[in-house]
Amino acid sequence: MRITVAGVGYVGLSLATLLAGRHQVTAITTTESKAKKLNSLVSTIRDPEIERFFAEAKAGERCLHISVTTDKETAYKDADLVIVATPTNYDDVTDSFDTGAVEDAIETALRVAPTALIVIKSTIPVGYTETVRERFHTENILFSPEFLRESKALYDNLHPSRIVVGCAENQVKEAQGFADLLLEGCRDEEQRSGQAPQNIPVLITRLTEAEAVKLFANSYLAMRVSFFNELDTYAQLKGLDTKMIVDGVCLDPRIGEHYRNPSFGYGGYCLPKDTRQLLANYRDVPQTMIEAVVRSNGVRKNFIAEQVIARAPRMVGVYRLTMKSASDNFRSSAIQGVMEYIAAAKIPMILYEPGLEDGSEYGGAVVTHDLTRFKEEADLILANRYDASLDDAAEKVYTRDLYRCD
Image 1: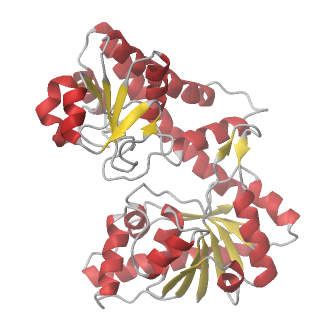
Image 2 (image 1 turned 90 degrees about the horizontal axis):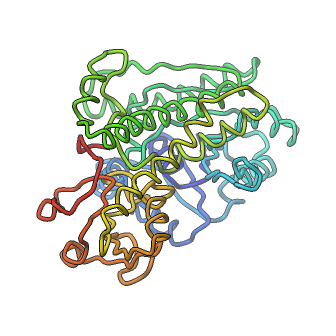
């Protein structure tokens, strides 16, 4: 097949890499420098599996039929399948996702390759796919939610917990065909590595239900993060041992040990914007819980900042902006919200963040790449996720990372 993927972020690049083993994949980016790197098989995101696939392709150990371009006209020409994986950031003014890039991709695809099947992988509001099908007068658009973790996007495509595809009632065959395409990449890698076949559930739903699956799944995860964060807030203020309580609570098999590690709040690409979008979709529906999840995240960041400010530090050191270990993304990371409160309290900050320019300023903090200087100058170090490099300054560290995991 000739497959076009619009977008080379976590979703787009991991899908392009997954499908390029058997099919001719053309990926679209708006940045020439990204296209140049990717065409040289240099990953533009931090993802160990993508880096491994690229390294094996360079060494001639793996065949990847992939090219990346900024020329949309060329990319869509003769495509059999178009996967739209462009970002949809939350717009505070409209109280909804900004779907402009999705619509631009659909419009160009329909004009250049009118017979291609279009599958939206971007996160969108509930009811959006039906609306866009009506707007562009086409039934040739499906929706398939993605469930990928940052820095593990290709791994999660190779080992999916489930595959969900939304379609109209007369498109079940096309929806199953797309699911089979994703499964094909998984099976090829299983065979290559000698792994036993995975039991991967496939769910074919209606379009709007598939959109709802994504937003409700992420909002549930955000709720769970918020629950354990509020448990930790209670324990801190009451002088209790958070870990003892969490360990006891999670011995209940109905609760389990996943998503239990306290943090400064949920962040990243998905949970902040997806919870807010779901709340916006509830505009005419009675609810209290969804709103509480969104509010809880702000309350948690405020509480963490108050704990820091109460210690009256001379200089606060902020260790990394990234939400997770082994990640290069710090979009909407909770620690940035904490920094806003500290900056408002006029407390000086120094930030150790190799992903930013040394000597620059970010969020009211001076950026340094010198970890030794960072630990020496800060008398309190704020770390959403603890790292062994802080061991020699552990007495200065304020973290709620009790289990040393994401």
